[in-house]
Image (tube, rainbow, N blue to C red):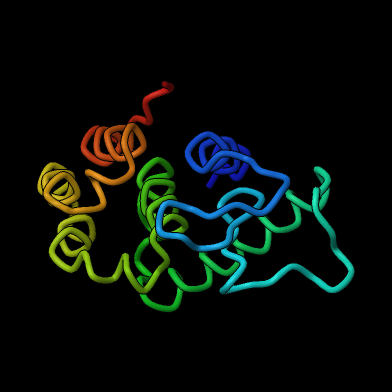
Length: 149
């Protein structure tokens, strides 16, 4: 997978913040969608964060996300690169455990029924909650091409 593209897409979709803020569910967050309840800042770090710290948090969060996907959905690595990034982006946003709730959608992805998978994504509450991100990810799932905007 092209990690540079994954990084750019997550920065676009999550935004980048150098201070602590509450996300749409009231969870303390910083960096690129880094959940401070699930993973507090390392000892000695203070706000505002610097670019290197934001990068370190994102690298850590991606490592955790990929490990969870590898554990629960080992087939995801066999997908083409665009669809790998769709699954990883959703897992990053929702958490792997909540992504696993998309049972029918994931089954469709696994068998290559990408239009059915995209329809399942569109039918979810997640689709309505994340705006343009979900539209882009659904188009990418269905077509195998990530929209640029």
